[in-house]
View 1 (tube, one colour):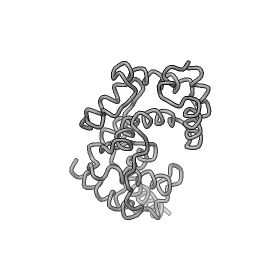
View 2 (view 1 turned 180 degrees about the vertical axis):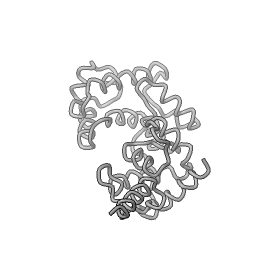
View 3 (view 1 turned 120 degrees about the vertical axis):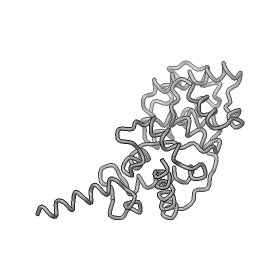
Length: 231
């Protein structure tokens, strides 16, 4: 554990130097962040943004989304993919929040400890660790660490996760390893690194600032060395 924590700090410093600090800015209120994160699942950024725009134009308030027929909501967000599933999920969450809290707002989470807020969000049907962590980090500035596709891939290659660790297990593991003060910068910098350098199909290991800390690079280097000796 201590060894991996030291490794995370080294990685954070290298990525910080490579991509710079990230100034935290609240993207949305917590309820909007929750709903829009659900809309972003299994789609690209362009279709996600278009689905969000269409939903806001058709239903200016979350109360209107909650009270609308699910078929209307699904048709409105169809461009975002999986619209029937997402529409039912969003409406169910809005109804659950209204029933439990008496209003459509998640501002009360600001006054909760992070662990308590995380647990509350994940108690909502259809809200997993990534969605909950996005709400906490981007709307409430709490030190949660969302794990997206890029972070999951980079963390596995670096050896920060156990072999075969699931996405849910990755949230727990990285949440325990990343120091609170590093969560925002490291989250965004790991995503940038995954997009630009540590790509899925053709990782650019030769220019990677993390290669000295990377299990994947070490295995590739050894494999090439063996091939060189064999020839």
